[in-house]
Length: 117
Image 1 (tube, rainbow, N blue to C red):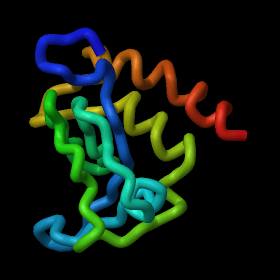
Image 2: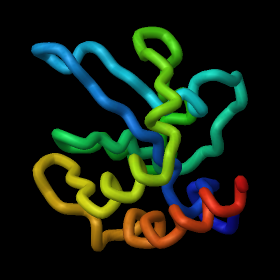
Image 3: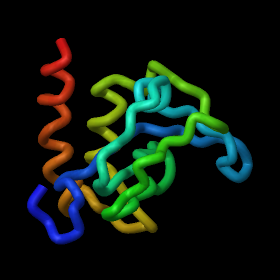
Image 4: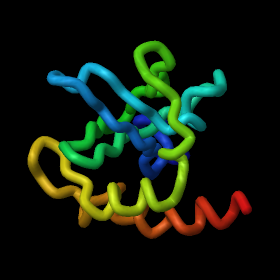
């Protein structure tokens, strides 16, 4: 990184489905919570399907997603869960698809999944 705020460029995304009357229950991409790896200092987005996503600009929230209170779901760790959410990403009622860092993130989804094969 070569930024004054010492944050990495881009956005770290994970898929999350919230349920319940007040969205108090969550299913999260299992790959994001089954290890204890520290995440980079960078913007983070919890990509939701049926309601607005959560976006936290730099320094982000390296501790997210939390293991407690979330159910790991390997079904959310697939390309076809990430791409549509990035293509329709909304934050606080505003479309963010054509804004950085989401614009570039959507372009890199295929690369991320093809590189793990």
